[in-house]
Length: 148
Image (cartoon, rainbow, N blue to C red; front, side, top):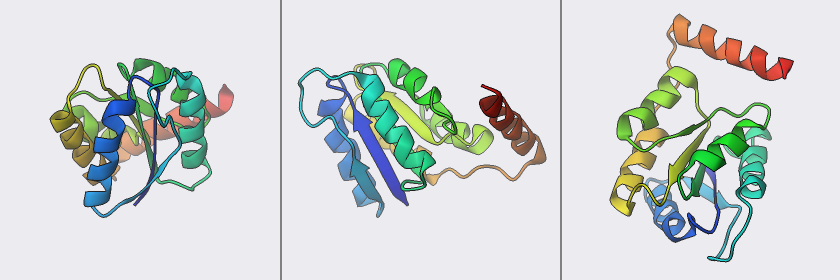
């Protein structure tokens, strides 16, 4: 799977661990920044991640910031994005299985490297359910997205 990852300055220290893990699983990953610990605005990075996902250049995205909350809010402003903050393994896979989440947001100030690796594994191994209920609900989300 081809992925895109981004971080702000608060997430930057954890991002390389996540990238290394993604590659160890056999996936390709594009890093859209930040590239150091200098302050950046997370909405700019979230936009870059979202654009790679909505354009089809990446199947899914990952954002790493301080708490994951700001990144999730910013990414969800972009049409076609379903972003979720995931700080536990169950949410990381269920968000994909039930809600077809395409951007997972992790808080580097909340989770450590060992949990981040587990979150990424769970997120990447999950597939959107074929259950009619979940498909219907996600279609309603798509319609809401279109309506603005």
